[in-house]
Length: 364
Ligand code: 13P
Ligand code: SF4
Image 1 (cartoon, protein in one colour):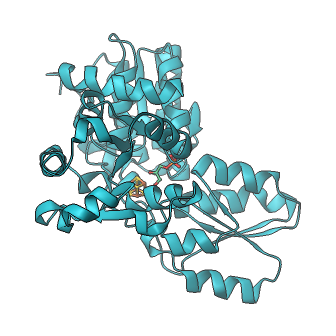
Image 2 (tube, protein in one colour):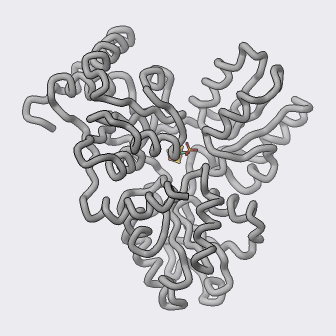
Image 3 (cartoon, protein in one colour):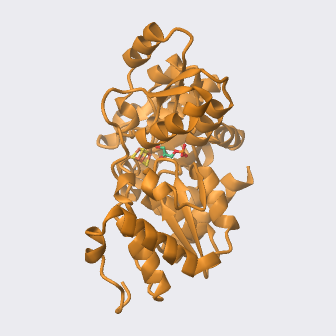
């Protein structure tokens, strides 16, 4: 933190209205020097201040297009890292609360992936035969690993085209950290379940035999999202019983069984567009994060649509929720005073290789 930076503490006790007014004022003072990017899972009090909202892919593209000096990312840590990697060197990426991580991204680290690569290389020539594909929900050093090993990054929007690209170059894919996105996408492309094995990073050789590795088309990392794993096929069955004609839509981070029973599967942006384009009066069950579902329900009530959350438990992305109005006001007012707080800055060598893997994705 800069020596003269304003402390966070006084912001914590601000009332909601004061906080909102201070955000508006600071944003106005900064003008086009700042751009605020807001992921769809952000709470409304933060989301309303975003200049651009979107899913991970759309926001990465906004970060490359932006001319602003400061990119304030209301999302989670890996998103701000991506903004830092693909923006110009003179731009600064800021995450209002540095503890806003992604539980799924934390399920794979470089040491584990390096070990997996070595172990796979003891069975086959990994750099010739396997394309490493990392979901964008991963740390920058894993994107860098993919850049160094002929691999690529994917998001929930483009996973299928990225797998097509990967298979056109090499025979197999190591997909991390989300097993569900990998499995759901592979199956949609016609790869049978038995050709996709799970790599358990806590076990030697991922818990697999050499034959299992040789026979697999996709090796799926044993990671998952704790929010999307709460959705269950029974919740869909209940909805279908109670709401005949209702439609079900899920994010591909949900389990295979949930996605199989859904009418539509896609990224947060896809979910929004599909429901927005649906007939007035239609009724929807949605398997993704609660803030997005509630916002959709509120905005589409005017068309008499009902948008219902899949689980009866509260499944919010608790890390995304850490970005709150006090943190946003704090980073913006510091910028007005010339202080940069909560900068996310990726090591140069890591960023250079990660950019290769990200650019391969953005070019597709
Ligand atoms: P989207 O790219 O679909 O927004 O997904 C990001 C995410 O973290 C979902 O859990
Ligand atoms: Fe990560 Fe899940 Fe939150 Fe998405 S919803 S950011 S995958 S923890």
